[in-house]
Structures are given as structure tokens and as C-alpha cells.
Image: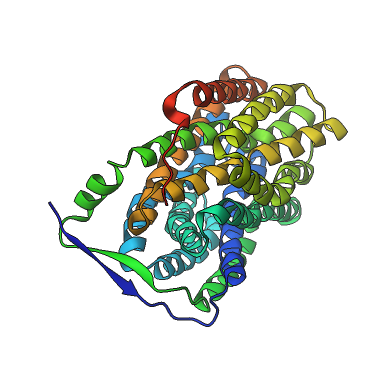
Length: 402
């Protein structure tokens, strides 16, 4: 048995208000979510330059999240033990350098490796940022607060791909990543000035991994939330294939496909706090089940709709229902013990990202064998099945204490 003590670690900076914390976290998630989605609109150009199959494109798209997943558990431990602010500042610095190097990739393998490296940086932020928000907001406010935080992420998913698409059309995809390094620098400055309350850090005399296994992995509520995250992310990430589908099926320009893709992210900006507020008031499980059912319906319609007003409405709907991811994260903060919250969030999102990477590769394989339309229909089926699982099993029954 390992023993542990908790100590208070003061943090330095100038600003400590909740709105300032939301702004700093919003700037970071703007960068990281924009960094995730920018590659989607660049995939058609990358496919042409390197002569890749759809399965290979799925691997390129998944590499960012593989990097993210690889760092979450370790990032959670380091964040709990050595300080959240320090961890996320190191990650932002790493992101600036790795992201700026992507355009120099002479092969798809180096491109994939550098995307993996930028995803590692996201792993250092995710657990620390969400834990800071959980410490600042009481449980009854947490769904709305994390929803507001993810409105920043939706803004990044809307703006960055459009900017990237415009740069690709005029200058090439290699330069499209550079604006992200600038936004990461802005986020780093905001966190340098942040003063958060004294934080509780875990000081364990035993093995770090022993602590993780005994305290986090024995929390049944955290395990349940991890399974829910797997189902929700699998059902909500069809947007990866939307740009390449629009370019290949409807012969749209990359910049036009970026605008259509941005519509879903634009809807997520107001939808994130609204969905979070509804989860606080009506219950997280009702909100997640409704959004999964709606996701299945909209994805079932998507392959049969041509570019135009109806497609815009479908993408707006997908942008709204996909915000249930932030609801699950708010639930995860309440299922995990405060002193080990970062590690618990790391576990939850690692499982979710495994779902996303499986979808990226499997979806690409289905597109190669049957066609891109079949990929969307398959994900629609998964969404409906996930809704049924939550409604008919004990998975959707949680004991939320913190």
C-alpha cells in the first residue's frame, strides 16, 4: 500500500476571476480543437500530393488523437502532482514548435509523426484545463461552465479550418498550420498571467502507477463514464469525413468544403453552453440520449442531401447534437475524486480517443471498400445502438458525488 499526503501549492499570476479563467481555457481549447479539425479540410490536398488511399487518410486524421491519447494518463498524473498551470504551459510551448514544423513534411509518415507530436501537447492541456474549471465552479454550475469553455473549442473548429482552407487554395496546405502556432502563443500568455487558487497536489510515496491503478481504476463511476465517452465520441465524429466527402462526391473546392464543415462548428458555439445548461437542469443522461438519437437520424440523412439549404440544416443539427461530448466531460468531473481528478479525466478521454481513432481508420476502410456514403450510414447505426445501450442498461446510472 502506498501512502499519500496532500499539500497546497500556490500559483502565481495576476488574474484570478472565473471569466478570466474561462477566457484562458477558451483560447487554449480554441487552438487545440482547431488543430484537430484543420487537417480534415486539408485531406483532399494531402491525398493528391501523397497519393493516399482513404484508409491512409484515416491514419493521418487519427494521428493527432493518438498523440493526445498517449499523453492523457501521464499528463493527468503530472498535472495532479506538479501543478496544472505548469503542465499546460509546457504543452503549449511544445505545440507551437511541433505545429510550426508540420509544413516541412516531405512524406506522409513525417506528417503523421508531427501531427502525433501536436496531439501530445493537447494531452497536457485537456486534463489540466478541465480540472481547473472543475475546481473553480461548483457542480450545479459545471455543465454550463464547461459548455462555455467548449464554445471556444467550437469557435476554433469553425474559424481555423476555414482559414486553413483559404490558405491551402492560395498558398498550399503546408502553410495552413502556421496560424495555430500564433493562437497557441496567445493562450500561453493568458495562462502566464493566470492566478488560480491554491491547488491540491498528490504527493505519493509509492509508485505513481500503483496510485493510478488503486485509486482511479477502482472507481466504478469513472469506468462507466469512460464507456459512455467511448460510445458518444464514436457516434459524433463523422465530421472527419465530411470535407473529403463533399470534395470527392460533389466536386466542391476545398475552401467551399471548409465553409460547410465550419457550419457544424459554428452551431456548436452557442450550443455548447446551452446543452450544458440543459444537462444541469434536466439530467445528463436525458440530454445525451436525445442527442445520440438525433445524431443517428441526421447522419442517416446526410449522404442523400446535395449541397444547399437542406445540407446546411443537417450540418447545423450535427453541430448542436455533437456538443453532448462536453456534457460527458462535466459528468466525469463529478464522478472523479478531486485530488485525482486530472488522472480520472485522462482515463476517460483516453478511452474516448481510442474510439475516435478506431472510427477514423475503420471509417476510411469502409469508404475504400463500399464508398464514403456507407461510412456515414454505419456511424448513424452506431449512434442509435449507443442510445439504446444507455437507455436499457445500468451504464446510464451513475452516483455523482463531487
